[in-house]
Amino acid sequence: MDKSAIFSTAAVHGYIVCFAAQCPLKEQCLRWKVGEQMPTDRNFCQCVNPHYQDVGTAQCPHFRKAEKVIFAKGMLHVFNDMMPKKVEAYVREQFLARHCRTYYYEYRNGERLMPPSVQEEIRQYFREAGWHDEIVFDGYVEDYEW
Image (tube, rainbow, N blue to C red; front, top):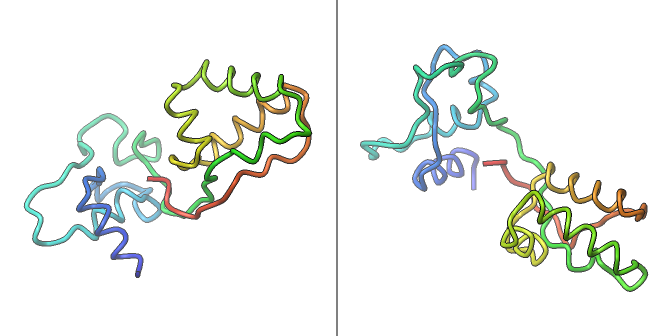
């Protein structure tokens, strides 16, 4: 599947696009690139308001980098027999303090992909709990950070 087909599929499925032609970030922005690939048979779409503060500037709050990143998928095998139970409890407790229970279990079970920022957050919780071995998630997937 080529890149334009991926962008068109995202556009069809309601991804918020951008048409701020004056934006200095547009060539690196996923929202702009998806907007460029908008199918011609679509008569409407969800888009960023080009008149909103900072849209179309280098400080755009809606900018999404148009490059693939590595998502982790699942962390069932992270918690192993060598790891003290208190480490798992600490990681779960800290994660739940910042996120919802549903996200924790979806990330743990591989039902929701973990973006790089969440992976690093989880690694930090392990370090805080005293576990310094490498954290290897169950699997990895490359995709755009929609």
